[in-house]
Length: 518
Image: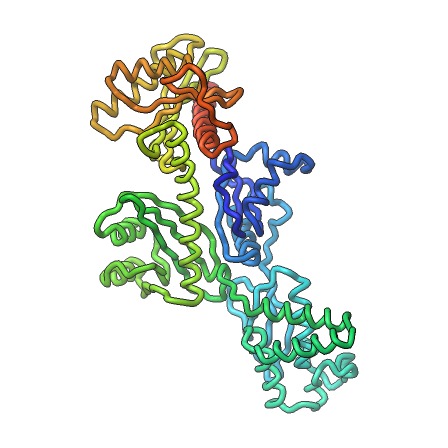
């Protein structure tokens, strides 16, 4: 079950996944929570969208700093993952740039940057063709740069209209033309604030004379120019690759996210959770890059050890730079990773705190294990156990069980078997026990699991959740606990139960498939 409560109101990209974890759709949003929620609140979707929503079993998201960045990231992720429901977006193009050539009398036009070598200067990218064309028209009209592919001695229409300085006719010298090019370059880089100020004065004059159409046209020009100065952090023109690492430590646990930047483009994020040690950052870097080629540059909140830089350079066989940015684009990316950490890890943690309070537990149940039973008309019965840590799946601790002692349809005995097998082993090997156990089912399954825990002399908080009304039962009361099924705590329990159900069905299907092939 996809929990909409954890989604932030920030811009970014969302990734729908099916039951197997395959990405089936990637979208961008100005407001992630509002956009993703609309898929489940509205009913007037087309057939394709309805099919996508019905197949969606999980959701991931990446927060960006603006909607523009989300558009660029969406383009990158779609090309990389090729989701089946993004068919219309699977083109091989990149977003358009404005290009000024490096000729003696440079021409201005549109180019598509693919990461290879290209002469001249590129500005952008522009995810909006309308905005790009508006800026290009403004540059041509203001600085009279030529647009022809080849200069001839015949005067063109732009020359007659005096929107081109006509170097082909000798109407401008090379130094004068280069000065115009430099002015356009400054504007396209967002550095010509004096020009913006004069345009604002001109717009105000038109407004005072009630020349509103002219004022609106200049307003649009100013808006387009100001957007050019907005730095593009998700896609930057460069050949080097970067990794951005940031982390947060809470109660002795490290929550870490790594962004991968390939040739200036954010392509992926990876999440890690592990116990804090004195030199955890050095340990993480050493272990991670034992299997991954280091990037040209590693951007970090702190420098772990001067020897790390040499260590990574030896693995890469070229120079690797460690950077701790204080300001600018790299600092922005570091802050963006932290924002993703807070949204990815700690939104779930708040639900865990609420669940602990709703169940009157001694503290938040940081580790939750949930059991489900699946069978096909009483045959091929299997059990599943999923583990959640801090409100998020801990898939390395998922477990599957083939039922060995039960014949036919007997969910109570099947639950008893898997609970006994799981916790007798943990007790024997002196491994940590969970803070809460969830059973998929009603009071019958709950009491079957309770009896096995009592036999093992284990005292672990235990609840069950019945599917129809999403009622949550505890071992301490006959009636379900008074908890709204739409509350964050109940939604967390439902999400964990649904994940256990999905995991059990997947396992049963694998077994049936193997039998059919044997």
